[in-house]
Amino acid sequence: MIRRVRQSDVEKIEKILKKIPQFTVIEIEIAMELVNIAVNNKTQTDYNVFVFEQYENVLGYHCTGKRPLTDAVYDMYWIVADPESQIKGVGTKLVEHAELFVTEKGARWLLAETSSRESYTRTRNFYLRNNFSIVAEINDFYSAGDNLIVFGKYFK
Image (cartoon, rainbow, N blue to C red):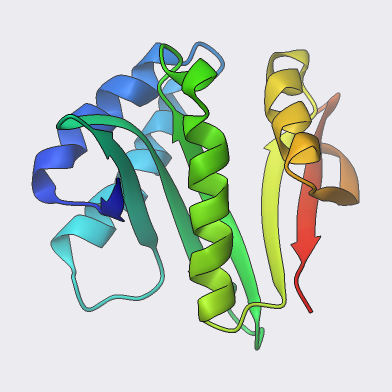
């Protein structure tokens, strides 16, 4: 079942993030900042966080939000599956839910940004398998030799 995040999910999400070796401490802090904003401010609409739950276990989550200054472009800030459950298709179910959520809001684009580092190869392949296209690449964005790769899916 995929549902909105609750306070009781926060620690579980952090544990999942810490299982993923390519995430740095700073990346985990940023991810948790967005989760906490969603949990602690129910009236905000910038960060929409949903969890995949099975048998009361949180197996992953996604966080989307409308990009400021656009009329129908959404960002997928985070999509994370517990590495112990990725073979169950959790990531694919989460991306499908994210797509449904943003298209119900009238999205024209869903964008996802990631790194060109070798440790993010699985992430890039995940987006390609889920019919996202590379729409932009900015060289040396995160650091020298670490490019920003923007994946996008166009809905209209």
